[in-house]
Length: 482
Image (cartoon, helix red, strand yellow):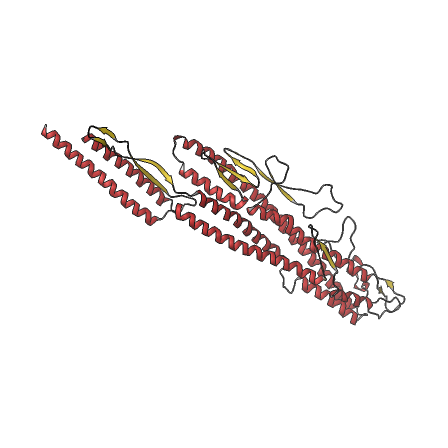
């Protein structure tokens, strides 16, 4: 009888000690990212059959249970995929929009106004060298602004390519860690117990993978997970496939080299594009392959067609040496491009002759009229000429308008896209917060609750200790009776 009481009390002491250790572990990791609350699940020992019935033999810790809900994990990661995509797109689109800084006194709209105004001033003073010098300066400033915009877009592309490389590297690092943790978990759970802390470490990486790469998780019966990216397997068991990013030049090579060569994402040895993409990875690729090229394409169309329109009007005019008549046919105002090197925002500039001598700027459209102003008026009228800029998007949609109107449309589209991304990011971040609150209600550590549990288990432990004292006294009484 005494030995039975001692055994039961001993099992209670050991079990409640384990429960206290689990509570202490929870409190110690209350602020550890990704940690899930654990609970020691107690179960009665197998009873023994005696002549007067079954008699209990104490208690044991059946398992250390991790408080986690797979459905809540899936909901959180789904929201995190959207958050990763929308917040990254918002950040990148804001940087593209900041290139133009409109409205501004130093922006394109103002530069175009000053350029056309200078032609209007020249039409009022067709013999003025000073007015020609202003036209020269305004034309130079306009070209330089195009050049600056293009340079900043190129800088954005370079920065985004570096960001893409870092993101791909992070995806590969996380995939490798998940595969390694799969192996460790499989080995640790061979005895039937759950490797709680290892699973927490793996879930933390799976959360980040969802945000960065838009991955999905499939839980396997053996405790490992399979991670899917796009429609392909990123991690399966202890193996993982490497994600890579590379430029994809068009085939055959075009006569005019692309400024923005598309990038594609590959998985493992597959030569095909990884699709569909999601998370931060998708946002970066979309800005690189769609938004920056479209913005640069609109700028290139503006630059090219400004050069065409201005040169066409200018070469119809005449320049004079003093009042000597007839005048000499004027040359190009801007430098004309070639078939293999067309005019773009990156290379628009004044014609060398105009840049060297403002006297080469034509105001007259009459070879025998040095005081005529027809050419200057024609160039000033380009300010309000509609349909002077036309650009066709890759999907076949055509956009057109006046020079100022077309540019304002470009800036407006960027603003709308950025605002839309900002709204999507706000919604996604709210969804993530709500999903995290729901998940933390199950798996998060509440220190007040843990302290209550500690007091409860401590009382049980003290009761078990008193049981040993009682059993000892009973045993001594029996010995004294012998």
